[in-house]
Length: 177
Image (tube, rainbow, N blue to C red):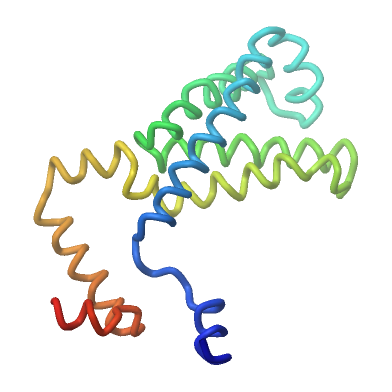
């Protein structure tokens, strides 16, 4: 392998929905959902304490109400994210909850990385899924496939055009196409 092709392999973005990238999206969804769901149950276990320590501190009105909103966003959004069902709205709700958590950490401890770290990583991951959806191995993809086969074939054709434009299709695939 030449230096140029090695550099190309390192720097070329993944524009094709291949098995490895789509499997990693599904794995990331499962891990995120498993990790975040317990936060919602922790909030519910002592909602008054959470409301006082976290929600009231940042000045939101109705701290008990917003504590329940945060708890149920995590309890409902996490399994939806894991299944890849309504992925974008679930991820956006979870992203919003993490943004409020980051705001709380900044108010309490300033821009201290140890306090911001976990909620920022969660927020970035949830933002990724809010923008990109659940991927091909999601319930959303199954539903879209079931509802509109023509839309998926049009999307597949568009992906093939992008592959050709970026030169990602190998010569063997071009001959077979």
